[in-house]
Image (cartoon, rainbow, N blue to C red; front, side, top):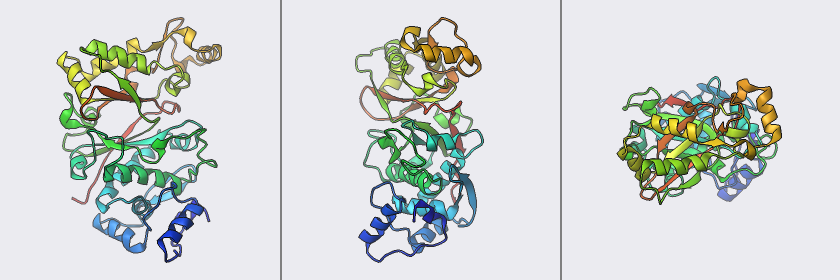
Length: 355
């Protein structure tokens, strides 16, 4: 039996917890960590709490093409250790990552070390205690850890992305265990990320995107906005990133720490000012790329853009630079390159709760 087992209606579990965990591991249904046995009682408790139809099909998940019903999503949520109230977040995440134009097949099967970011905005973040402050991308918060893990188990067990057979990541990434956090809206001097994307402040949303894990931007010596942004530009000006080498029309994410955000806002800069500066400044000199890459750019300017003999921007447009405020005290920020699929853009969906 493989992870296809979770596509069937029922499987008979052993009685002992250790035997259950061993069986799920042998069958390729886990991420290698212990799981909560998805008994019918636990799964139905989660579904009934949210007043949902267990057979409702939310989406079809590539590349295996498994049907993500409410019940099957709930099974993976239980295995990950989620509380019942987390299920609407997972359903919205599944809707987002299976939206038209979002290349989930590529994210699932690529050799690139990317993981599925799950970003939460709106009132639900506080309601569910999703960490947006100090250590938001690390351990210690049940909601962050289990929601992110449930997304991964869903991609594995319903989508079939088993490492080494379908998931072809050359080295992988620890972000594939869990990659979920909320925006620190209270510490942001700008409008929240989901409002910027057309939602109301009172809406709760989830945003998904296939990204590398976070890269630190150490801006401890920056005393003004231009100094910090120069550091950011130098950090993301990475000729080895997939954003630059393959498809510059893909999004990348910059998570600005609250102290850096306050510094930039104090000097009167908006998010769009940041994007404009980085698009103009984060450009790779031609001598830092390869002859092969330059030849590809000349053959397909519609994909890469036509910049002649000038330094090449890390993205095709400033709109490909997504800015979120995350974290606690300290002059650190992070950035996350995309996996580099064809114009891989973030998708944001509304979270619908039983309330």
